[in-house]
Length: 171
Image (cartoon, rainbow, N blue to C red; front, top):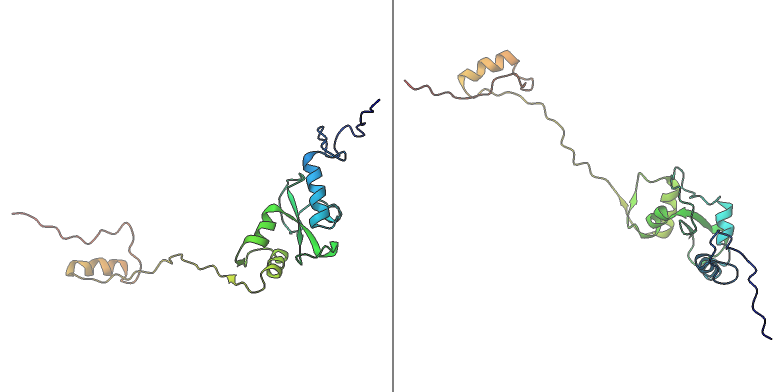
């Protein structure tokens, strides 16, 4: 008589009821397999050490799912938990994929970026804002001199001042 295998878990530790293998759902099983392969089994240790939060100061990422946090290797290929850090997906993308360093980034993010891109350049923001220039009224016609004297000659033209127009009267 053939015995049926017994299911030892009612649900995955994450709460999913559909068990794939080893008492884990498909997502947890994949993460566990990748943890062993890429992180030397230290991914959960690093996440627990960092409190399942992004380590960048001021990060407001509130996602706390299985795939919402990345464990970043500060030295690629080194599986020492002291050289791994938890980052949200947005900050991890900034460190690994961005080709320029921005001065307004938090200091830790700048350090992590520089570790990954030692020969890259920093981005300088150029200011293209046009500054207002003080206008000086230059009289072109005799009638304009009266307007210039009334304004003072050096102050900017006000909206209440009449425009310089030539009126042609027919006789």
